[in-house]
Length: 128
Image 1 (cartoon, rainbow, N blue to C red):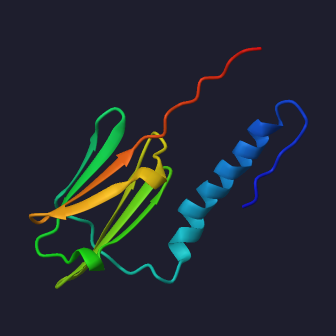
Image 2: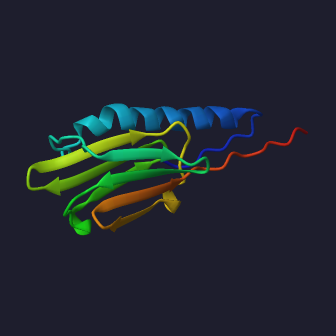
């Protein structure tokens, strides 16, 4: 989506509102109808931690191959799909605070997938 600008005072709030509405529609309506979605079972051993400045997801993956794991992230949602012998396991995690999508990292070690999602910092607004 192209960035929009306006010379009218307060117009930025409407641009942000429109962006959030489009994201909401995409995440809650359109994403459900994408053809790449498969019937999946939720993870049995998944843990979501809130460390203040970041979220951390820990998932026990047994013998999963890192190349077969699919991770998708948006500002307020993380989707993880792991294929296995019993089919695909999938979980979606929703966050109260927006995350910095460009700073998300994932590591698979000793049968545990660890995903770290730094939160976007708030922005202080100066009053003129």
